[in-house]
Image 1 (spheres, rainbow, N blue to C red):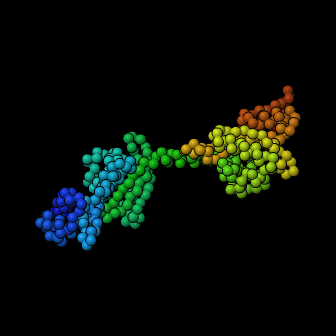
Image 2 (cartoon, rainbow, N blue to C red):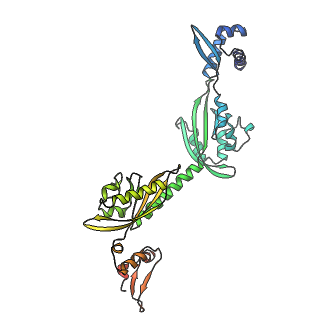
Length: 356
């Protein structure tokens, strides 16, 4: 019969009454037990963290550890932590585990954790992977779990461990990552949406840091300079505009960063021996603290309109800003104008329709 728990309990009681510490000889004398026996159990208690030791001269004084037991600390975690034996039968668990496994805390000990996880949504093929002798010592996976009658994504980590008594076992840690996963999925969707829209527009769209360093430019921006869009990444916007425009661009970016609000400005830039006018709008991108992390810019070429273009140029520019299809004809039905919205809606280019 194993009396180790009884011996360890008696040693702990003696040390509790002598908080300054005791030598093995003193403990042995107080309990009327041999020094070898005391030494054996003191070593077990030291390895498990129950006692600490300090040296005074040649003597080693043992005293109860002031560290918090790990099993108690685990109860303050929101993640489920479960310890099992080698056959996956639950030996101990923290309070969160009962909620994750959908069972009463008092009835968890002795139950097979894999059976409980399959009930909660773990796929049988993942269970087979866990049981495989070829799997790594630390196994991780995510799966959809039923928590409080709701589907939630969780992250499962399982590790093979050896207990203090030398037996093998496993630790399972289950963490609810549903909100994080949904945020990541939303981030991917909006990322794809932004790039799709930016690639299809004729406006020059870019993203830059508060220091005016490019982190993204769309294909139309690159085409204006006969460069690949990717080649602008890491370059300062100040390097690609003339001196007249630099103060206006700096002022606009400074306002967006300091006020956290959009800003609109008009300026001209010398491009290929020609002065071109732009209507530019800058929008802040905030981080979680509210600081402007990046700036999204929409730059529209308004050269013909800004420099006194005809009413026809103005009308065409305004019509091309609309998403709706706008078509003008003669009384006989001859097409006079066909805006960009009409091109996108019908699929027919304006050059083929004008005059038809």
